[in-house]
Image (cartoon, rainbow, N blue to C red; front, top):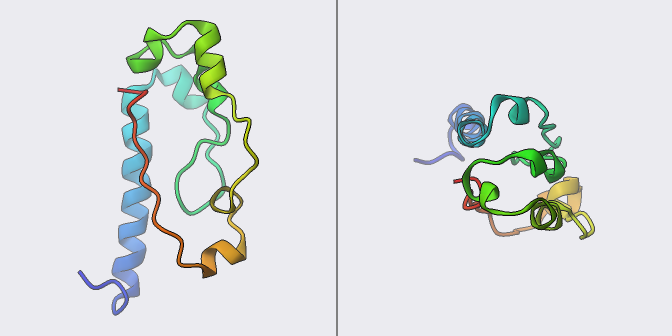
Length: 105
C-alpha cells in the first residue's frame, strides 16, 4: 500500500497499529496491572514506567523473582529522542522500532 498518496489511509493504519499494540499488551497482563499503565505521549505506544509491571506474575515475568523483576524493569538510561519525541528525531531518517513482547508471553 502506498501511504504517501493517501494520508487518510496512513492515519487509519497508524491508529490501528497503536491499538493493536496496546491490545497485545492487555492480553498478556491482568486487568489490575493494565489499568495502572500510563502510556507515554508519543507516536509509538510506550509504557511510561515499566515498574507498573513489577507485581505481574504472569508470562515470562512470573518466572522471575521480585528482585530480578525490579532490576529488569527499572529504567536506568536517559530518555531517547524517540521517547521524548523531539523534533530532531521526527525529522531524521531513524530506523523504525520493533517491539517484542518476549517477557510478557
